[in-house]
Image 1 (cartoon, rainbow, N blue to C red):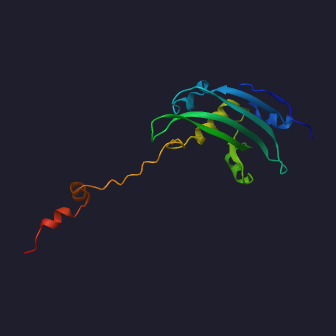
Image 2 (cartoon, helix red, strand yellow):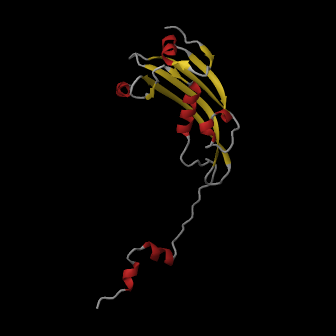
Image 3 (tube, rainbow, N blue to C red):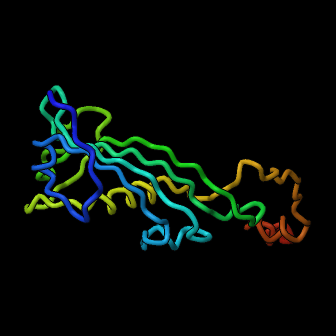
Length: 172
């Protein structure tokens, strides 16, 4: 097997040709250029470093392996302060031509349905993985936990109890 060649990342690539050639690309993307991700960030300072390698495994399954390294600026929902969420991930995407191919992928692969023309946009794949890496509720590791017991008032307890009105009724 030959050593994969490393190149700058084109806007789009033919997945099947890249697999056959065992190509690898490395690049950097400014966070500001990732339109779908931008709305989830507190600002767009920084960049994403990534590589994408194409090949086949020992079972002849074609894949694209993404390696992503980024720090995403998020707003902590406890302190409302900006913090950087480190994201380092490796994701192996099994390239499939139809949905039936997903069942044949080995464990550890995520399915990536390739269009009929075989074209993929590497930057979109990176952006997809970063969106999936976002926490539902971003909380900075340095934020202090809010630990306080909030006991309900008598009125709140009465309103929460649907049978409270029945307690005033008497049986005759």
